[in-house]
Image (cartoon, rainbow, N blue to C red):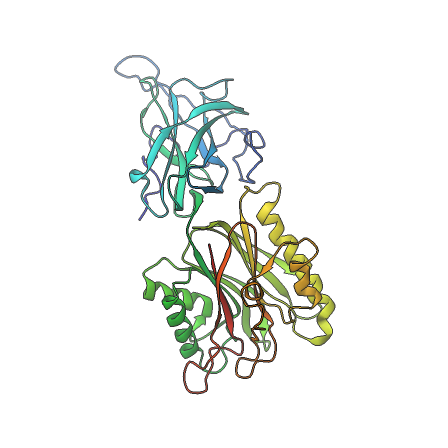
Length: 439
């Protein structure tokens, strides 16, 4: 269990939200990190009973790891990381506050900050009432790492001097999910996609068969459609994440976004399952004529770099062809903003996966694969002579399920999953799925 703070909320640092004024962001583009409000009055106390002199206290404190919130590097590459700190009565003046120190640390994802490697940061510039620091972060080997700043005030005139406070991307704490994420290229990541067929037939047995196969294939990320939430199983994405964690010993998590009620009764939606650290997540509503459609994405730290993994499910009726194309355009723009928008760190790859309810040569698919969009159809690129029919799984006649990749990683082995019954004549879904290894 990671401790949120390396010091107590005592004389040195206030426990509550701390006000200060702040500039819009660091020297580099703003990371869209929410900062703190304007500064209030600075409190002083007379704590010098023995010395008969006033002792300055830090009644207000705020700090963060400012930019970037995540990044991709290759082995031996370096990047500059920025952090900001506010100390009432200390950082408001122009220039570096005397006796204020900052360090940047990093370590393996999920490790304790006490085991991290730390290096001294240097003062960069004044940002409103804040002092901004910077330090270089290197990538000695491939893998997934966390990083964060820590700050302390030295000098006997400050109460509680010399204690460190960790500060993540959300402010002066470092709980799980609040450190910056570094993805160093050089490994592989396995991504699968599957329509779960809601809770039809025998869902408990079908989900168990899915978990067994995915655990055996050492899958890292799974995008799922027709995730349903109905007693007694509950949310099927959550149940799958639990089963995978039990089978693999890895920290599987799930994201879920409801889209509509199946048969007007059962909540149904999209999911992303992953054993990798999540830097951010988002959802968007897609154009539709019938019940709502959405796209759900997660920004993940992987051994092939930061990856935007998006799950989506397009409209299914034949008369919805025009809406499917509009949905594809909306997903392309949505993922594009998260992959390479002006406020996003560079070097992030993208993967869009799901049930498109249309075949490869139709406009909705070509929105991604033609016209300069730059996405590669993983199955088609590695099996040009195999149509990979995915629906219906018992007697497939068309491919309507996809894994599309853009930027950074190379498409390696691609597999067609769950094409045979898991028992007797029972299939895990009315769709078969796909898996791809990115390198």
